[in-house]
Length: 235
Ligand SMILES: NC(=O)c1ccc[n+]([C@@H]2O[C@H](COP(=O)([O-])OP(=O)(O)OC[C@H]3O[C@@H](n4cnc5c(N)ncnc54)[C@H](OP(=O)(O)O)[C@@H]3O)[C@@H](O)[C@H]2O)c1
Image (cartoon, rainbow, N blue to C red; front, top):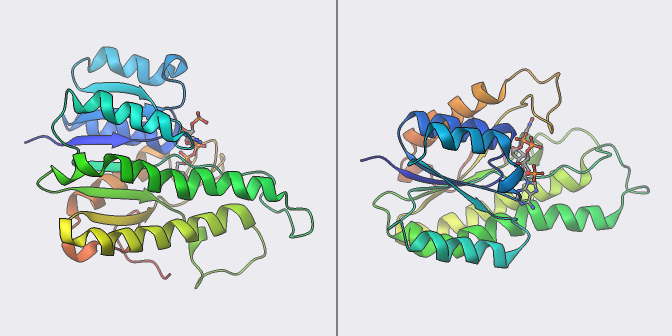
């Protein structure tokens, strides 16, 4: 049976590439983003896959937008197999020092990168629990690794993704009783608006690896911090 996938931040970058790949597999994709009406790439895809792509507005920092979408989709679909918490921000400048860092940007980054995925997951739990093989994928970053930390950069982004990793592990343990596999996956350094043009991976290459890793997840994987190819990363 084909899967039902929900992706946040699906209008560009890695989220859009993942949307393409799941649609190619004939899965049903619920693509969410802040402004579907101006998401031209997603609107074009919808004309190619009219019955397989559903578009909804979710701002992951807006709890109400998340619960509204949950209510709307619950009338049409029975469950969600894979939730991909992909939406994320990395505030500029990435090299702000502790003395120049704006704490409001740290707060905003936590809202989007940590509380957002937790809120989306909580709101969609009842639909995930109805899947025979539910998975939650939190798109994290290699910059989350405490063990590999070797510079004084990325205060807001780095600490938010480390916190997301802890949220992933905590949720994985809590929901092991429901057999929900919950992992954090680092997409690698990817050519997107966030990763910039010098990154070694295209968004399609990264998304393909993430897709293969998602397909190969088992109950043994839950709570792990993985690279895009499924190898374990040091916490
Ligand atoms: N690119 C890399 O090298 C790299 C490396 C490691 C991890 N990552 C992670 O990969 C994920 C995707 O990043 P990307 O490279 O594809 O970045 P991107 O091109 O900048 O895309 C970010 C996506 O997140 C969405 N977003 C931001 N804030 C949101 C909010 N409050 N609600 C809903 N959507 C929101 C953006 O939507 P708008 O268009 O509305 O802004 C956009 O769709 C992120 O979690 C990022 O941290 C990326």
